Image (cartoon, rainbow, N blue to C red; front, side, top):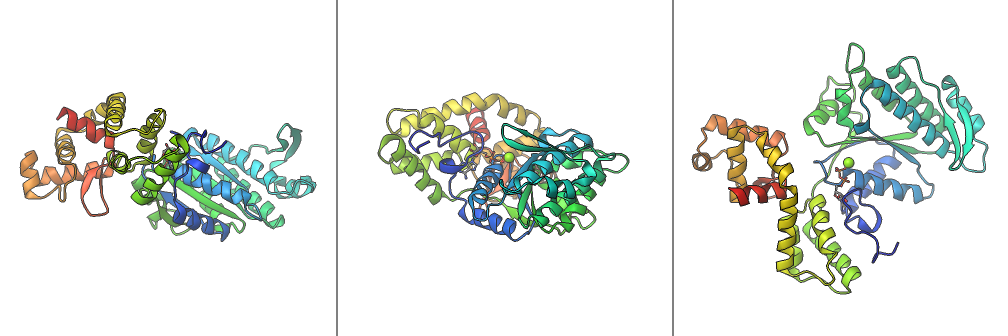
Length: 383
Ligand SMILES: Nc1ncnc2c1ncn2[C@@H]1O[C@H](COP(=O)(O)OP(=O)(O)O)[C@@H](O)[C@H]1O
Ligand SMILES: [Mg+2]
C-alpha cells in the first residue's frame, strides 16, 4: 500500500508507514535481541509497546541473517494449561521457522523436540509441527522452551520469543504455589543460548515485583526498558508527512501543536483524533480540530465517567483539582490541599493511589497531570 492510501493512524498496532520514530528504542531492542540479552519492556497501556515490538520483529525478519520470532499474548490465557498449550504451539511454530526452506527439517526438529513426540504435516502455509501435551504444565513449559533453544543452537540461528502482557502470569495459579510457572520460565530463560526473550506489559507494580524483587525467580535475568512518549518534534514531523501524503500540503503550525497538546502526545489519542481529521477533504483549521476533539470526548465520556466513579471521594477531589488546573507542581503542597479541601494525610494517600492506578503522571518538567487527556477534558467540562 502506498503511504497516501494506507491508514496512517490505526487504533490497533502501528507498524511500517504508521510507525512514528522510536528509533533509539528500536535500535536498543534490536541490539538486545541480536546479542541474546533478554528484555523486559514496561510502558503504560496504549503507549506503543506492542507496536514497537512488532516493528522490531518485522525489521529483524528482513535482516540478514533473518531473525524469526513468535509472540504469546498472555491476555488470552486463563490458566496454567492454556498458557502451556500456547507456549508449546508457539515453540513448534518457531522451531519450524528456524530452518531453511530447502533443508529437510524433520530430522533436526524430531531430535530436539523428541520428548514431545513431534508430528509433521504439510498444509497451506507449509510445514507444521504438532507437539504432544506434557504431563505437567509447568515442567512442560520449561522443557519445550529448552527444546526450542536446542533446535536453534543446532540450526546455528538466533530467534525471539515474546511474552506480551506478562503481568497476567501472576494471576495464573498452578497447584499449590503460583510461582511455579514463573520458575519454569526462568529455568528456560537462564539457560537459553540462542533464544532471546522479550517480556512486556503495562502493570508497573506487578511487573516490578516479577523482575525487580530479589526473591522472585526472574530477578536479574532481564534488562529493563521503559517506553516514554514520542518527542513533540518527531511527532510534528510525522504529522506533516502524513498531511502531505493526504492533502499534498502541510498543516498550519498551530494545528499540529494543538493536536499534540490536546492528546498529551498519547499515541492512542493522537491516532483516534487524526484518523477523524484525515477524513476531511482539506487540511483542518483550529475550528475543525476543536470540534473533532469535542466529539471524541463525548464518545468516550461513558468509559471515563465509569473510571472516575470507581474512585473514593478524596481521590476524586485530587483528580478533579489536578484536571482543572491542567498541571500541578506539588499535589501534596499545603496550598493545593487547602484548595481541594483535603488534609495532608488523606491528600497523600489519594495521590499515592492515583499514581499507582496510573491516573496521574509526572511530566518531564516535574509537573503532575492526568494520564488520560480525555479524562481531563471530561472533568474540566463537568467541573
Ligand atoms: N510509534 C508509534 N507511532 C504511531 N502510533 C503508535 C506508535 N506506537 C503506538 N501507536 C498507536 O498507539 C496505540 C497503542 O499502541 P499499542 O502498540 O497497542 O500499545 P500498547 O501495546 O502499549 O498497549 C495504537 O493506536 C497504535 O496505533
Ligand atoms: Mg499491547
